[in-house]
Image 1 (cartoon, rainbow over the protein chains, first blue to last red):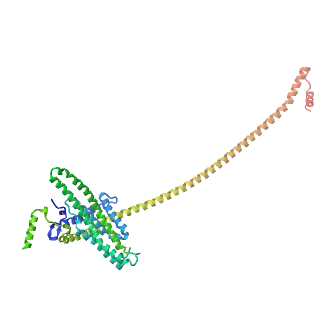
Image 2 (spheres, rainbow over the protein chains, first blue to last red):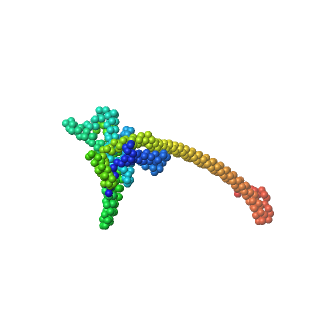
Image 3 (tube, chains in turn brown, yellow):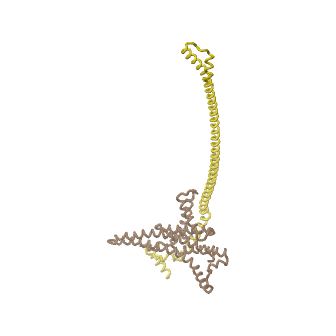
Length: 242
Length: 184
């Protein structure tokens, strides 16, 4: 029987350009997102149909999340935040289809996305606010003798952001898919064992179905969490100083 | 030599069939990072470009278009409401005016009619009074006339009575003087 982590293996498709199954699903996710939105909004209807409603709900949802965290001026980051949300969301959901590869189950991908967010925060913060950006690490209203410790803590907390941001998404996707595979494996193993054990085979199957529902929730939720945290970090770039 | 050995072992493991091949832990297989990053950069750049240049302008265009349409419709509705209210006020005013005019007209008509009937009544009364006076005058004349006839009747009657009693008609002068005596 296949190992539960075999599903995460990178398999080359066109080795000459490093095109792998991972690349294929990245391209697939982009195609699904852009194609889906173009198809849904092709009528530009004032009274939206089903597809256009979904597109508008996604738009308003992400825009609401962004403006809640950063205010109106945060909307300049909307294309980035919306692209991030849609990419993670679509990659997570595509991964739920049996046999499909989950792009976000690789730490390098989630870490790169997290670094994109933190990089944007740092670059924008420095360009916009200059040295004032470092006010981020100096909370106001703290006694001066406490300040050195607070600054150290704030710096560590800032540096750990990309790690926690990427690890959260990566670990959730990885663990969910392993759990699904393990319970699926139990079904096969019990069926293969014969005798009384065969009768028990539906039990892990029920578990796998329940987990599947949970994983769909996790897939959507983690995309949302990633987006919310992105918005909160972007708020630091827009309004440094506590 | 050792390397060649290792390669053979690896090849053998692979030949065994994919089931138990040594895959390690794929997310930590650093040799795949380069390829993944390359394609992540390519695909995400394409996604970001298409999103910011194509999808989002279209989407926000639709939403903005709807918002402005709703705002315009609401403005129009508000303007129409104001106009309707104005028309209502004008109507109320016209109604009040008409009511006032009607009342004045009714008052006037009533007064005119009352005056007319008053005049007619007075004329009728005057007419009746006149006729009453005339009738009274006629009655008085008739009465006087009748009283004038009484003396003649009394003379004739007295002559006739005396003629019956005496067999001879008295002289008219005697009767006349007797009547004058009674009357006196």
